[in-house]
Length: 474
Image (tube, rainbow, N blue to C red; front, side):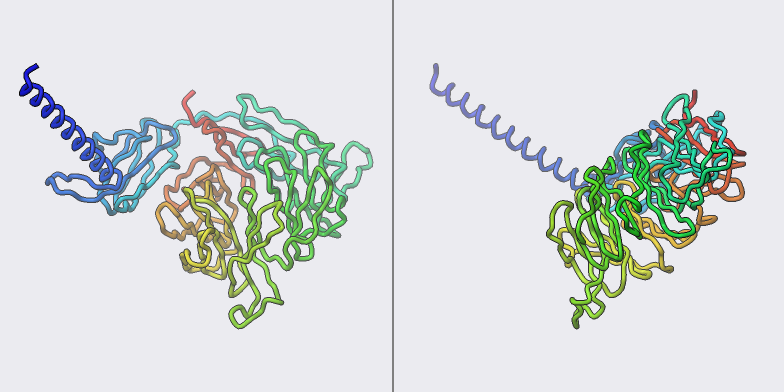
């Protein structure tokens, strides 16, 4: 081979490899800039944008951004790079109502809209069950079942997530102390008022708080085997002021007795020693518990009230003090993206702390009213605060607080992200932030729940019947 020709071949190979390396570097840089939100605008100027990720129920809705449908994002379940600032998003779909919201896109950040729901305009209605003998109903936490209650010992359970729902009788005559047998011995009357009903996560157990003429009574009802149900008040001989289920199958509970926090082991039929004294409020997430309490022995110049926020893991005896409080506070724990947070509510102020850096990393929000309650929303993405029919939502995705008012204080969750209220026979729904108010049905029974199950059916009560409307075309 000619040496000069060999040298030329080497030079070509080297130049080719250099260009390949440069191309790879440029590609990586461009991708990194795109991921960071940088974009080339119509004037060939580099600007930093944000990204919108949007989905809907049902899927395939048309998307308008600022009044225009773009070729980049014509359907939901897509993403689009948008300039930073305010944008109005509107979703439409043939045969369905519309949905809209104005969002604020931040440079280099992702904004997710995953909860928009559009309702079929022409819905088919069918009757599911006759419920005129029941005084109240309670929907399971997974929205797939309902417990029907009356002032006798014969309650009913209905699995709503079935093409043909069937009612199953539950005999609770042996669960409540305040029960008396009628003269004909055919029915047991319950002389108790049901104050609270809370389901566990897999809808297999229901924790019931009732009140009779003498005392408060707590019962853990086993839906699938009533004989395994437990009267907690009788079993442990204790007057509990508050109890919460803390796992999927109700094997473990947290209970407050004489202002002291205990853990109840259901399979072992045992109650722990005091975990926290003088507890004010508590909340749990997975196996973590956060609480507010008062320690008179810790009163100091820095903490004259002795109120504080603490934390522990279930099964771990190490109880930590996270910070002090100026007054008694409601407290919750949640997770947004990969970060856990702890929020405290004192009077009309909400403070959100990052759990891993409680003292240093926090944000404060003021309200125009003083809420009675604070709850973590679906997947920890928002907080809901309320006092009667005044509500406030702290939206972590939007990084903003919304205050709004609904028709009355008899409201609930119709799905994971949408509230409902029944007012003058009309079933009204709102997004969790109070937007997209819509009237879904009329002649709806007051003080009975409504729910969306499996994105297929809308259930509600009307004229002594449980009815449902199909949310998808049959």
